[in-house]
Length: 391
Ligand SMILES: Cc1ncc(COP(=O)(O)O)c(C=O)c1O
Image (cartoon, rainbow, N blue to C red; front, side, top):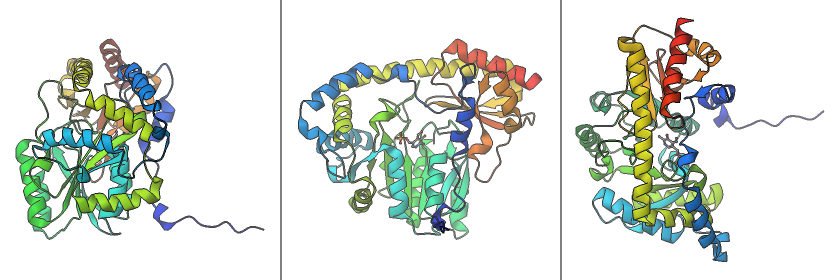
C-alpha cells in the first residue's frame, strides 16, 4: 500500500477561477461569447510580429537565456515610454520585465506580503489579483467602486479605523470587470493616503492605452513613490508575447529579481526582442493602436447602445470609454447566475457579477466583453439575452 503525500496548506481554500471554468462550458460555436476577456486576434499584428521574429532570429543569442530583469534593449524602450507617461526620467533599474503583468502581480505578492498581511482590493475585483493575494495568505478587504473608480473615501475610513494595509491594488483605467476609470482627484487622494500611511499601491494598468474618445488620466504613480505601476503588451500587441513590465523603486525590483530567478530564471529573449522592436517603432505602433481604439470603440458603442435600447431603465450599464468590458446591472433584481444557463441555451454567454464579488454579491450584475464580436453580432447577442430573460 502506498501512502499519498500531501499538498501544501497554501492550496487550502484556493479555487480555480470561476470564469475559466465557465468558459469551458460556453465554448460552443453557436454561442456568442461575451464571457471571455480576450483581445481580438484578428487585430494582433501577426505579419509585423513575423518580420520582427525573423530579424530577432538572425542573432543566435536570442535563443539564449537572458537577464532575469529582462532583455536590456526592451527595458530601455520601456524606460523611454514610461518616462513620458510618468513625466520623469525613469532609470532602467526601475524597469522590470515579467511574463505578462500577471507574473508581476504574482511575484509582488511574495515580495510585499507576509502571511496575514492586509491587502485592499476593489469590489468587484480583478480575479487574477484575488488569486495572487489569496495564495499569499493575505487578509483581503474590499472597497467599493463607483463611476469615478475606487471609493477613496471608503479607503480613508478604513485607515482611520486603524486598518493598516501592506498593499492596495487598483485597476485604474477601464477596470476589469467594472469598466470605470479612476478620476484624477481620486488618484491624488489615493497617492496622498499611500504616502501618509505608508502602504504600497499596485497600479495595474493593462488597458490604459485602449481609450476611445479621451486619453486616460495621468497614472497614480505620478503622485507618489509608493506606487508600483504594471503594464503589458498583451492588449495592444499580443498576449502570447507574454511581455509585461513593472516600474517600481529599485529595492522592489531587486526583490522581484531574486524571486524571478527561482520562478523561471528569465523571460524569453526572443519575444522580448520582438516586443522591443514593435514598441520602438512609434509611427507604426501609433497607427496600430489607433486602429484597435477605433474598432473596439465602435463595438463598445454598439453593445451599450443595444443594451440601452433593448432594456431601457431595467439595466444600468457602464459607459465603456475604453478597455474591453461593459458592466451591466439589472435594476429589476434579475439574478445573472441563475439566468446564465438559459442565456447559453439562447446562444449568448457572459460572466455573472458574482464571479468578481468580494464583499458585495453583485448577484444582478454581469460582465460583457465586446472585443471579439462585430457590432451586428453584439446587437444579436443583446436580442438573445432579452429572449432568455423573457423565456
Ligand atoms: C487587470 C488585469 N491585470 C493583469 C492582467 C494580466 O495580463 P497579462 O499577464 O497578459 O499582461 C489582466 C488580464 O486580463 C487584467 O485584466
